Image (cartoon, rainbow, N blue to C red):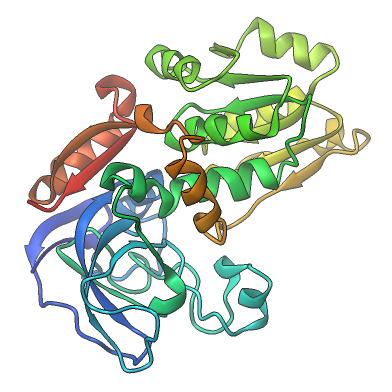
Length: 342
């Protein structure tokens, strides 16, 4: 099969590699119909995760068709259409029983594209397939379904839920990339008083308005007013930039929440000299994807308007081009780039 292979930092290529095979009886082999590139993939390509070994197939978000199952897979059969979760869950350990799949103690967690071959390929081996896939309804388009593999669960679980967004809240989202904009979409389910989005790219700020932000601006007067005034109830860091995190600490109110979603490849300063008396709660987290079935139901019935998040589509064989388009998102206008099997 063909797949995007990591060789060393900043060097990946679309190569011919052996087809995956069943290695454990809980595995399934899925033929990829759609996959995508996310910000974490850029960190992986740069070599920010040293545990990724040369020869690893990248990618951890996909939708596809089951072509083979192991002997202990009981809820899937060949021909099933599935969403492949970015997090693999054994389903049996204490962490998984608590819904904390990202912290799976039974051999799961974030495996795909990191510790085992991932989804930016024609086929993928899915560990713990019964628990790590969700059936895709026939009426759910591929370009929307693939957003449920990681993007929307991350926005909900790590941003909205960890940040305790509630009715009447002022919510600030720092970073209008795909996960920041997905957070705007999901946060509206909780009836905040207003949602403010901050980013440096004008085109992304315009998109923020289209997906429901009440205000969108570059860092400026509005954030200064929050910093000098009452502050925001919830501030969600979705940029992955140290300056973005510091902005969050200035904008949050006393007793408020900062929910960090962004993947930080560089250290961010925690200004305890100004935060220690504000009673601020700061949360971080690995997405669990336990919310995927719930989000899928909302999406099917039109409660998650996610169409503006997919800006580019192409064939799987243009994977290297997709990385470049996505990496230069502020100039190309790319948010989610979805690649289809042709």
